[in-house]
Length: 140
Image 1 (tube, rainbow, N blue to C red):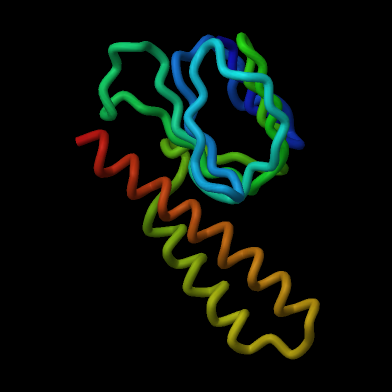
Image 2: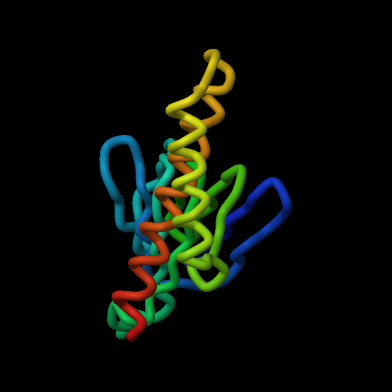
């Protein structure tokens, strides 16, 4: 089946895949060829992509997503998000430092706008750290 992962900056992924695991409000869903048609909401989290049926977990590709909309048909998966970062593009030490700064920003927020922005950053960097950890564990 074809997977399209589309951000505000364009397509991050447009390829044939065997399986896609997507975080949703009701939990993660695994999508395989022939999946029932579905439109839903993706939540911030990690998308995992298995390119070939026989690939083990060490060959999964991971993307940190900000949440968005998913559209699934029997032969196509489209995920529309504001941003998506490939695990290979995430530098764990930099992301940890950014998370620490976001937590300090949240703790010292002086108004609702600052607090909401800080919460967005905390969520973003938490997901990025999760994806970096998944990549590190599975790609040894």
